[in-house]
Picture 1: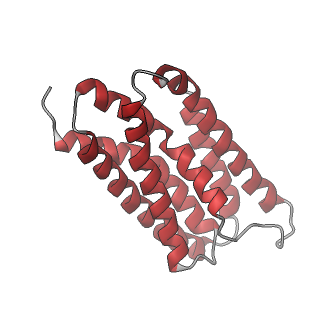
Picture 2: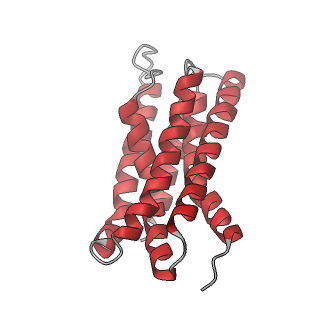
Length: 184
């Protein structure tokens, strides 16, 4: 039962991979993001990755089993819905319909969908009696950093490869949703 900061960091990196993938996707599909909007992605992804372990930690004795069993389904629905909408907009042929605008609602949905796994990590932290706040901060900071990196890398890739990344981005979101659902 000894706390290992390297293990927490590795868990944080694993948790941040979905946030990185989604940020990468948004970076190459949303060409007109300002620096502050890119920062919002990092803030939202980092915040939710930070909060979910805290919520899981405090819910360990009450609702953990109910939420844990539905979490993959919720993440699947959110990610698949957003991904399918991206593909539909891209294939419609109407360039004006493609959403290239920043949306706090969409960022929130994506941040929640990619951070649901962190809830289960919070339960594990409680069961192992590991320090919650150090773990949660590391998880949040790593998610923030990976999200910002994903947005910037995706933006550069989108500039290089062009408009069809909207379809690829939608497919990536759907695949992340399916991967989450298959963990049932």
